[in-house]
Amino acid sequence: MISVGAPWRGNSNPPEHLINEKRVPYFLIVTHEIIAPVEPTPLQRRGQQIVDRLRGEFREHTHGHAPPPEPRIGVALGGGSARGLTHIPYIEAMDEMGLRPHVISGTSIGALIGSGWASGMTGAELREHSFAVLGTMRIIAGRLWGAQVRNLGSFFQSGFNVQLDACQVVDAFLPDPFPLEFKDLKTKFYVVATDFQSWHQAVFSEGPLRQAIAGSIAIPSLFKPVPFANHLLVDGGVVNPLPLDQAAADTDILVGVDVNGDPSEQLNKTNHKALDVWFGAAQIMMHSLTAHMMAAYPPDVYVRPHLSAFGALEFWRVRELVAHVEKDKDNFKRALDGRIESFLTKQQDSMRAEAR
Image (tube, one colour):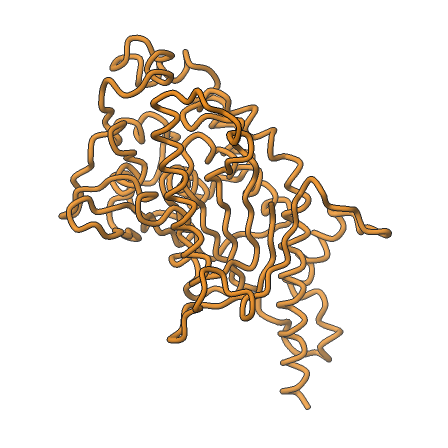
């Protein structure tokens, strides 16, 4: 599902309802029900038009004045364990449109993938790296977990019989070399974790990078809590599974990629395993928290792919996960295209008015 809505940035008059339809009109698009326009514009050509416009090649329409400023795009990458690998096609879509975000924020798997994006990796490079380090159970075990879990398949299917070290996981699965500190990144980046002692979110945007990511991915019980910067950190999804608030500041277009999934394929299932119930309960909690966050910081473009067919820890299905949302890339481009077009039109109208 992709939705496009008008921005509201959390002023002193917050919405009275969970999602305020009166002040935050949403246009919902269910991807598998979209009917193509009668005269569709080829996406490659349309994307190039956007890039040309951003680069000022439409100067003649502004009577010699400077082109409108580029929209500052903020992207929030949500948590969802293995399902978070589906962030990659949406990053690829922005690459194909010639767009780079002004700000990236990430929670849990969104922090891990977002760090690679913020370091300058393209979506294609993120895809290639993910396939290389997560392609099979054997590869995963060989990288790190095989040394701690003798039967990796049984571990994933039956539950937690050992706590993993989140810092070791980050070291094992990030590309090498990789920036050590936030200041070495190419894009402003915010990592959201949960302070287990104060019950509040802890946001990191400076200092050591890997420890912050480790704290953000530290799923309770699966990982040991991460002591860092006077905090005891666990997974950021406990308090803020889709960190729109961190990506909204100083941006013109807010994009939210929600990979928490949905209950559509679980409605009639009754034989849930203990691990399924644990992660299912976490999903319900994260869904509720995301709804509240969207009420306060409505994204201009919101994406939530249908991912209930994939288990939370099925990282070895990375190729299937990425392929599953490939069909949504064009819809995402259309939605983002529309918001950029609207922004540029308003900027041009404002410039013309000032020139009179």
